[in-house]
Image (cartoon, rainbow, N blue to C red):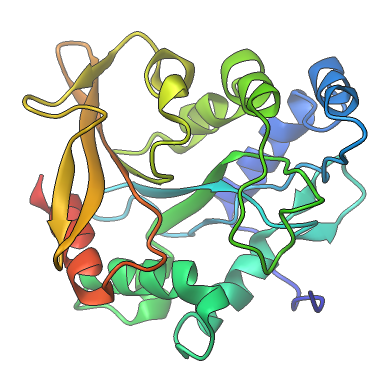
Length: 262
């Protein structure tokens, strides 16, 4: 993938990078163990969160959009043990506007969801209100190239990253989202709950891992839950499907309506 333009990190992005350094992401014994465990397959280097806008949380909502894993060695080498993907995100979210290629469907849908949540702002302003990251920071390189739709993450890799090292959960402690959308499908459901959100996780009434929503005539995985703390709802969570092959307008409407409902 061509090298992206330089990106000036937001204060919140810098705080997340400091978190990675403190782990240390990519150099922790669990990370080294993870790399050895999948041999002869090769893990890519950990990829940072993609975006945390400079106006994240402005207006009360702190929306975090979450994918599964990165594709290939995505990001810049800044001399740390992880790759910085923030400039890549700037490039991909702009390409998402063109609808020119199926490879950018995830980013095209993301762009439309963000804009629908903030219709009175320009997209550039709306993008600065949200954050975007992945559940698993590394990926299996043989199949998960940057232009692939395949998630080649072995269970052992996901387990170390999500349940043992708890990188995503630590990101939540920095980002403090009020709304989380997991665009992951059911592949990581075994970690949804304590590993991601702690003991305060609760299913929303009538919702669970097998719940679906109608998306333009197609079934869309739709598991709602929330994190309870100090007697109130701290964070609302939706685990839904990857947008690829889903009708765009119904998908965007479903997710943006849910994000702005409460």
